[in-house]
Length: 307
Image (tube, rainbow, N blue to C red):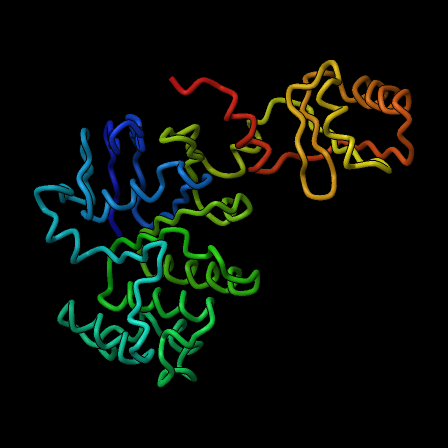
């Protein structure tokens, strides 16, 4: 059974640093909800409040029917938490870690094996290996198993794919989709913008603010500017020159190209950019209209006032 999460006017400061600024949000039961943003956005602080590890300065949180302050013991029983730093005992084996976490919650591996079976089958060949000797991807899968061993209704994952290879990232998200089908509400934070598309809804966070909350495809659909991809024979010099192009809303590097956001019409902007670059001596100029992705939307939203 999954639970809803209701967050109202949540504030948290560390001396002069405002980590969360009046955050309000409703998360539906059985959602995979993503918090997307760079380091310092407030994701970890929010998760620590949700998991009853720290108190907010102001505001309230309800997980299901439970208040995060008054009912903290009950919330800990129904929540699985995987912090940014993998919380494993490195000198214990894979199996010993699982047994330890199961005992904390008065359960056993056997009792809830159906929930972790898909993950456990991938780490079973290493069950007698110490956790400290596992690869990054295997450590993450073991930590996920430990967070699930007591059959939680809410799973909170703080940047679970940071520092692991691309294949392990893909496998990890496939596992999360399977967990969702078993009736768990999943909250996941990540600095990787491409992982937003794997969530049902996302909150884009920056400096303690929620810039927007919506389905990933809707965030992209709300992008209101024309986006141009530019390549030339001298990419090193291109960014500095394009910053001075009249009509640009913002210019930034994107992969092996430069992205230019503008409110000018497509034909006009392509002609103007080509003329601008030719006059500055550029050759092999490639200009094309491109579809925005979450990262483009994030950079656009950063320029809007958050109130």
